Length: 235
Image (cartoon, rainbow, N blue to C red; front, top):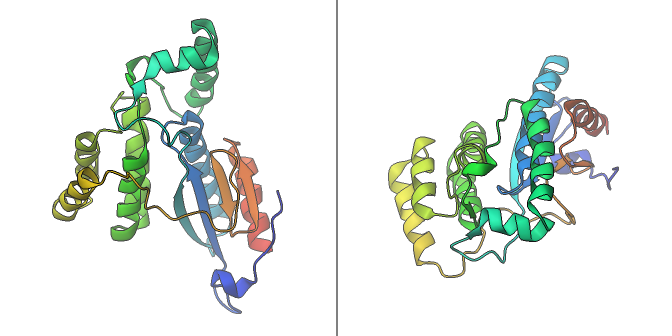
């Protein structure tokens, strides 16, 4: 989808400078297609780096809660999806579709391990914390770790104790992280502090926005993402 272009100077691109590509990824941790889309994005970025090593890449992770009204303690996962889709057979068919797509990118979804559909506010808050204090590689590693913990290991990523442990695994820094989680536990509002959308309406996730000029919705294959990247660089 072509979106309103911003002047090059608004993106930090000046005559004689290396071209830049900023990718905004709108996602939620309870969406398996977001993890599949993340893997496709990694492949597309690797291909772009080979084709255009002159391009400076930057990725921004944007929170987009699909179910912000989920209770802080979460909901029974299996019962939720049976109620949503109507019968166990429909749930099994939907999961088979997701598993098939996941296998192609090296993801072995373990839906049977998941007990809780979590409220993902605190998980997004953790990503926002990492964005403020860590480099892009650490942030991407944290996002991947949280997805794997939920969809493959069956962890409750709505539990602050689980999130703190995962944050420490990703070496976010024990002292600041402990203070941040103490604040999480004191907060009754569970407000997400990740960056808000910038003059843009996002209907669903995953959604990838390139240089604020082109966007791709859904877990599209790497070729589709790469094409949008190249078009956003060229203007």
